[in-house]
Length: 151
Image (tube, rainbow, N blue to C red; front, side, top):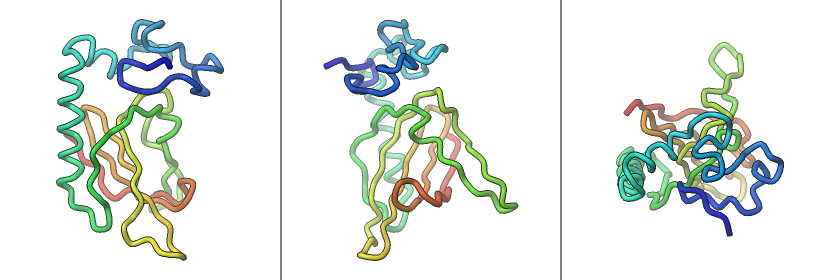
């Protein structure tokens, strides 16, 4: 099983199999054509410092105390195309705020208030510069940003 420096499981990944991703080790940290911040972070500071960063980000997310959001204990390396949702702005225009070809650390947790009619999730996304928490319906429908916080 192939694993990236960030801990992502690359085996079976559609981006790797299609050639869109060249793998972080094979490309020396440029899986999508430019240097991945996670690769650079591990390369400069070591895996231990990357693990400390993840722990700090988890603590920051958990300290937000968002109503209905359970505490998280892990962040996963996620390709931007999976987490770059399109949000409806107050003027009705739809916008994406992330980069499809970058890596992020994130997680998804179900809302604690879900019942048979309401099924919502919280999406958590971060890098060294920001935390983003959004809420959305099944399959990422109708996403709404709850918190965007610079770090």
